[in-house]
Length: 105
Image (cartoon, rainbow, N blue to C red; front, top):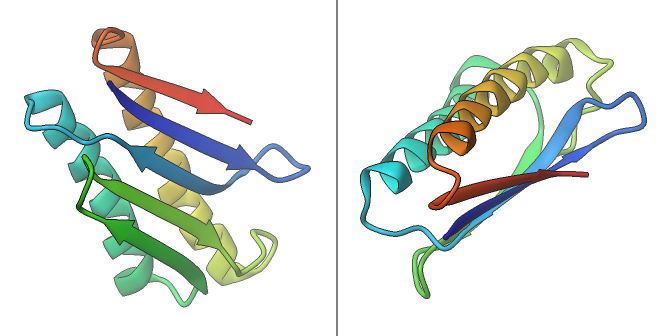
């Protein structure tokens, strides 16, 4: 099962996420596309600072953390992209609960 964990700041805005246990299914492809597109978009379209680590071994793993506060312009721009990713992941989790789960803290 693919697992995503999203972390929020005190204002309940997404500031970090990690995704574990990618597979070869279309569900994995959907989750991977949402996550990778979000990271690539933040990098290409904003001036936000972030850290991102990934490992394709052992089923796959990606971890992302915002370093720019979401109260700054770059943080707000990146935050909008993170919010859009969350909406997409929620849809996948609703449609395929036996293959993908998302936890928010």
